[in-house]
Length: 141
Image (tube, rainbow, N blue to C red; front, side, top):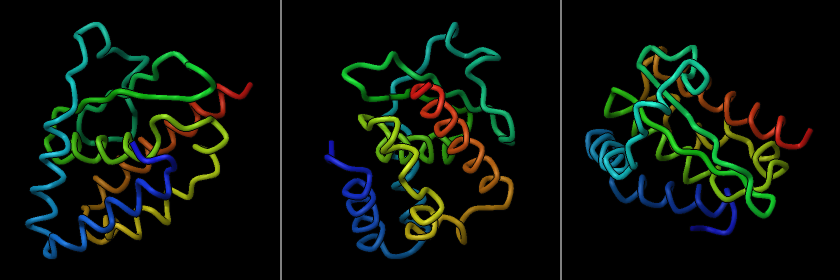
């Protein structure tokens, strides 16, 4: 894992640049999502469901270990699973403060996701980021 969210973003942006067109990038995003470990049926519940997403999305925050946060996630949509995988690369293994300091909007812009995603998917991505930030904020308190 990269040692910072910025390093993880740099790695993702470099890969996206190498892929070129959005058809290839979508394939890559779907491949990232396919690598996610599935959540158990018990983990797919009202508490872990992310509201504001057109697809079914669940994010589970694991216990804080050594001051760092990590999440696992799943969705019923392939592209959305890939978006979850991207967020996990950016946020997992970071302190709550690092999560809150990271500019997710700039990351989404840098990867070109804001132009490539439908408004529904963009809203869902924003909802996932808001959930992660809320979890980080709660971990500080």
